[in-house]
Image: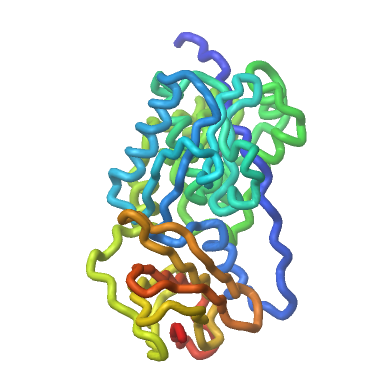
Length: 342
Ligand SMILES: [Zn+2]
């Protein structure tokens, strides 16, 4: 067997920490953690290239198209104006490959990248890297840090491998990216998917258990069946027949955690309105305006972990069309939620 060369690995940015609110039950906190970095389904993510060779840019476009081809409800639109982008992609070859996770990208200054590619994306490994970094942007963590994976590492060898060329990580980075287990609250289900696009490739000798991976762990590349199921469950294709929400009419919602309800708003008059949820549920409520057939983010509120309801004001114009999306973290003590605008 020929010796495998070491490979560069994704070195993602640390997650933005969340302070656990006082008095929150474990179940409620778990549901908040599962969804907090995920986008509201139906969001259009505008991506912008901060330079980069044409062939590398094209590889990233292809990777976005592969995620979209799963039939998910998110959309990806390339923009040339950096100020219109949520996702900014750089190709700094000295900075490795990484992305912020999910909605954390919104907290990054618009002058800064939210994703970087540090190696060629036009071969098999590079194509999987592009899918992997977009997976982070959609809210996926690393699969080899799944606390249910049951991986027992040969820690000295792991440090030796990742602190060496071509990764040249510090011991802290190695711990953060490989050895550290993700909080079980942030992982769905209890199964590990070694075929996931979010799973690292590992050479022989780093994994002690499960024994089958002592000779190395080599995911096949591309989106696994579990990756595809995840994307379709968190971001299902949108129903084209969206119900209309009328002013002053509250609509009761029966949502399961991570479930979403969508409404069209066609305001009867141009004025300032309030939009909000009712009940003890934790929700994120987001308003988009349809401009040239594309939903543009207008306003939103997130009441997760707080003893209040999602509520915001917005000036709505008669003759324009808006879409209101409500996503549920936790159904609350009563299990009942309602939404209204007035
Ligand atoms: Zn990664």
